[in-house]
Image (cartoon, rainbow, N blue to C red):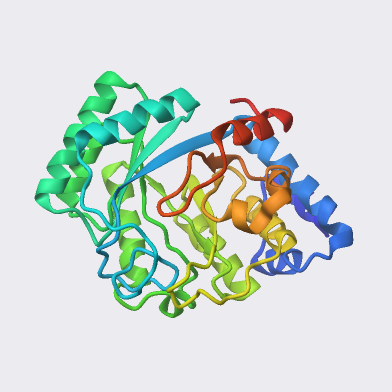
Length: 320
């Protein structure tokens, strides 16, 4: 079946939902065949370039949303650092550091439902300075925006806007009740209407079924998303998901491989949680179809050193 699906995708056909669901149940003895199929599709559809992104948490905590995975939610008591908007100078400084690391994109992130007018003005100033002084592509993840704000970011040549679906539609209410799945889909539609590329993915390992992971991937396919960050839940103490059993490395690798078969031409970016959940097997997801990575740490957790990540990618033969 793996060979049949691979040949169909190479000939231009799309994988069916039932095929994807069955492949996610692949046993360990066939795992390497599945990885090979996904890696073949990645090389044929995307080449050998790795997409590297670094980010800054420019405002932490204070969030009124109740996302059960998030240490920044004000609904929970966690060890997350809480601080207001950090200002333009620190954002520009971090962008320069990201450029030095070799990142392709630098993402400005703030917690909460969206920026105030004052915060948005400062973000625009930071983007203007990064465009002028640094020369790295700028992304943003600022929550839900009005269309005027989206147009302003487009005019500033923002490359991508991150707004994750987080989970499949039928699992979403188990994750968040303070905003809706349809609202997130609508935001992605607004971004596309304005011409701002959506960076849109989700989190696996929150208690969803394997079938619900596949539904998330097919939702992203219907939205024609070109950049798909995949986070793996790192349970944070104080959140409702603190005691959940994490996915095994092999379940994560299979999920990434099947996502590649569903989304042949997308950037599949491995994001938060990879160090905690994949441990010594991190390299295997890049042999199973992934072609993007966040370097230099995450919003509220540290990653490993940038040099370790870059060396891993060199060893795997990726173009940096």
